[in-house]
Amino acid sequence: MKLNDIKAKYRELFVVEKAPEDKNKPKDVKKAVKDFWYGKPHEERRLGDLYVGDTGLYKHREWRGVKDTMYYFNMVWLYNYAHMVTDIMKYGDGTPKSVVDFAKGVMRYRWMGQTYLTVMHWFDRGMEGMRGEAMRASAWHYRGMVSESIRQFQRMFVSDKKIHGGKEPETWKKNIAHNETVGGSFFYPFMDELEEVPLEMIPYFVSVHVNSHTVLNYIDAAQSIGLPSDPCPMCQAEYGLFVLDDYPDFAPAMVTSNEACDGSVATSVLQDWFLNRPLYALPQPMRYDDPLVQKHCQKEIENCWKFIEEQYGIKFDWDQYVKHAEAYNKLTEFEWEKWDVAANTPYYPISGVAQALYRIYYSQVGDRPIWHEMDEHVKRIMNKTVKNKIETFPKTRHRAIAWSCAPLYYSHWCTWAYNCWGINCVINMDSLMFDQYLRTDTYEHALEDLAWMNEKAPMRAMAVGGHEHILSLFDYMERFNCDMVIMYDQLQCKGMQGIHGVFEDEFRKRDIHAIWIPHALPEKRTVSRKEIRQIINDYMTTVMHEEPLDPTLVDFDDDKSW
Amino acid sequence: MKSIWKLLGKFLGFTAVVYGILFAVFYWDLDGKFMYYIWEPMMIKRFDNMKRADNTSIPYLQKDKVAPDEYTQIL
Image 1 (spheres, helix red, strand yellow):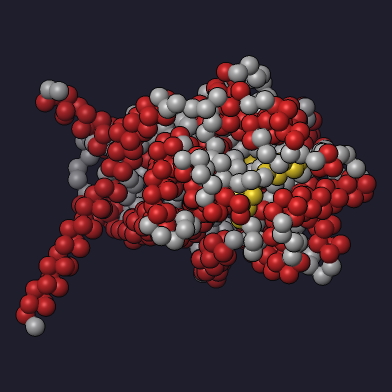
Image 2 (image 1 turned 90 degrees about the vertical axis):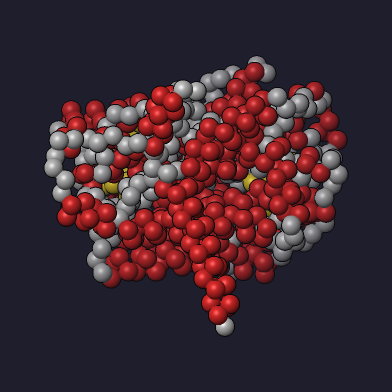
């Protein structure tokens, strides 16, 4: 490599070019010191200049002012790297062997080795441009998700037959695998004897958010054996894991589900084939307003418990159920508190992406100590913002609600939308799922509430649960004081495609600003992130006639980024 | 006593250097660049060349031996 090439590479990777209008400006030392200390004002940040080509990497990470940069370095970057190590130890078997199992998992599974080590960039993308309390509170949500992800994959690794030479580790018999949309709450009665781990949550779902490259292998693998390419790519990725033999063998039985659609039913059938072990299908009813469906759903849950008792030789424990359901209710109560602040004040300290991902993650997983710990941190910050009237997203021009299922490969679009256009996504459909208090006074009430919970699972009630639930968007829009809808258009979801026209009519009738965002859930090749941004840019300039807050974010390429 | 201060000074100096290096890694996104340009291509190569079991060769009917009818009945 010649010296000139090295210089060019250095410039490409590390040097941020000055804005053309700044090139001939005389040096203003006072302003430079102020920018160094407090960080640049929103309109002068030029965040788009920090990117290295289309990689999504940074020439340097953003300077947020001394206080916020040092907080991000110490309490986000260093803190999370350090705690990842301690979590790997803690959630393994508590010995140094945990690290060996982790290393084996990294070398055995693509979704681990290629994906999760890039996790700090997931934080960066989600918290780009954020300052103060918003950055702090959102980072705690991310920390909770990372810790829970480590719990899940470490439990898989320490119990995995595949990375232990086909031998059955001691913990293998004490695990139950389940589909990622089967709520952790269904396993509360067995929590003292059984460890539940969603099978696809880490290998597929979370991985796409962290690193969107990996999942494409699984989608392609599914199609390579002749399966059709038009069902939801989520289903394709989930069975692609099995086609590529890239799933850990960590449990003797599985509880699966129809998730949200017929495509997912096919996933369960294929999993039944590939797993080749006892499997119970716990369906989520498609239309549930009929009381008979309620009874049916309750019966299915009871049968699931019977299945667990028979497979594992353990007994339903009511006290365990009560303990965890009541703890989970505490999380729900705080969620309602958060919604109240988000809906009625400008002091809500959680970003759109942190709100969406944390809520869907903890409500899906169910009661775990880490969520309570994180909620305490966030509660402290939220109390401060409300008490001191701190506007957490001061450049908000529009309060948006995001509806339908989000693009997993671009869940952080809302961070970009705020930085570029001042669109503050205050709430989203996935956050409103699983909105169910679990009564613990009687067994009948508990069963009834769990059945309702099953019917309010992700992508269920408000995506394919009948038009009256899907159209509850307008009610929530009013409750959260939103003036704009970001309408996700999952191109391969036949359920939501069927109601597209109804939404168009309703938006026109109600004179609502709605931006349709087409995407294919985990599959970034169908609609790229850049195309999504372009759609929002076009709407904001041609319909809203607005100028971007940060012009460097209007047009940039990140096709090869994680 | 003097040697304790000296030792403490060395320790603080060492900590400051490590802290400075870590800050440089953070600020210049060296962790990201390492992952993107070195680690990920290495892993892709590894996983692309990994020998894998052909799960499609598992006979589907085997499931009938372990799944009792009652679990698949529609009630």
